[in-house]
Amino acid sequence: MNVVVIPFFLAAHLTVDEPWEHGPEYTFQVQVNCTAIPEEGIYGSVRLNLVSKLICQPKGSHMLSCHFEDSKANSFVVDSLDPSEPVVPAGLVNRQPAYEINEDQFEIKFNKRGLDSLVVNENIQPRELDMIRMIVGQLSVGAVLEGVGNDIIFDAMENFTQGECYTTFKIDKKLVGRPLYAKPSYALRPVFGLKDGKLVQIRKIRNLHMCAHKVPYFFGNAESFREESDIISDISLSDGHIIITSTEFISGTSNVITTNKITETVITTLYENVRLRLESIQAAKSEPLAVKEAEPASIFIGRWLIDDSSEEDN
Image 1 (cartoon, rainbow, N blue to C red):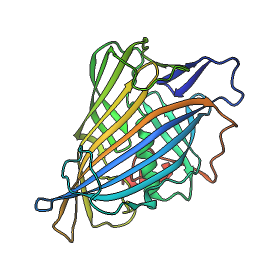
Image 2 (cartoon, rainbow, N blue to C red):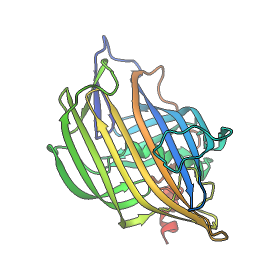
Image 3 (tube, rainbow, N blue to C red):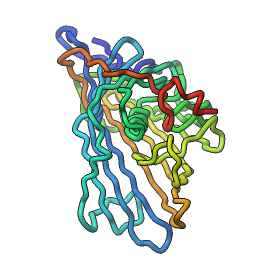
């Protein structure tokens, strides 16, 4: 049985005795790690970690119906200034429920380049909508890859959640020595083909100086883009990567952001890492739920509904 995992990009072949009545259900493991490092003279940093599950079902040929489950977020202070270093909390670990995403149903619409738009509950909080955008943005390729060959490099305007920027895509195919995670029950099939024992890596290096628009954003920012804010933020680096084998799909983004308040002189550097990994493909127990009080929303962070995006551009 063949199923669509990510429309226009990734399918899977499943070995089953008979077709599933309600189709497949995909579970993605979500990890978001943010490190805030103040300016020189302060010897410590603050970590924010979020783990969650993203559960999706295909709905038609170009849409996924999804919700989050088991979101858990916490923060703690550490003595290290290296964001890549495994650390032990220097004090209490504080739960951060404001960063734990609710379980409301929403929908993701795709086109051949990647994410096209969302359908969400009209009462969703803007900051939560932006967190959802940032996470599900890992399902977006950002360019048409059908028919690409081996070891190819090309440039394109990538339509991603933090802007539309000139991006260098680097695609490498190579032999993989061992599976990252064993999933013998299905075989993944990207649009450009992938043989068993091969690994494909897609790197996206964004030129943030060449953007149609660029959003100043950091994960879970409590400031609303509809209100006047005294926080100034600038994203200086944003790179993406996707790794696919016949049994694994892993997608992530790394951002470096500097922030400061107009009323203060402290400058903070934020290191964000968002990671999505396909954990399982199983039979769905029912048809996907409908989105309550549904409204369309742009994929772009900081914008609200599609209907008023032109007004906000002005």
